[in-house]
Image (cartoon, rainbow, N blue to C red; front, side, top):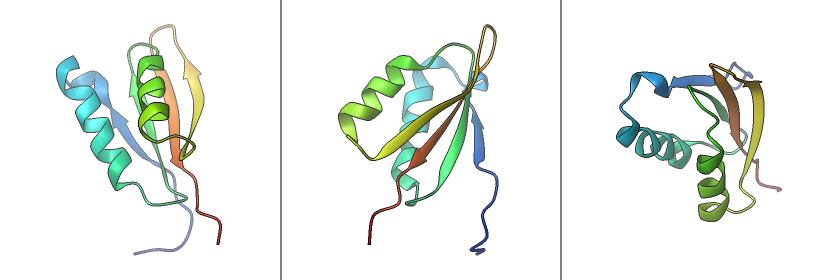
Length: 84
């Protein structure tokens, strides 16, 4: 295990059937350590996912668009580090 910063893991949900996408993403969110992030790649704006994250984990994650279509959306989802 390395303590050095690294590039976030990438999950490309375009290869998954739509019914599996949110379950896979929420499994990653649940496993995310404070201060860590992953890059979500999708074929449409995942705005409904953002609302669901904010409802289930209020104030725990950041959501940063890296690319906003028209064919590919990339969003970095990061779990905030807890204040000591």
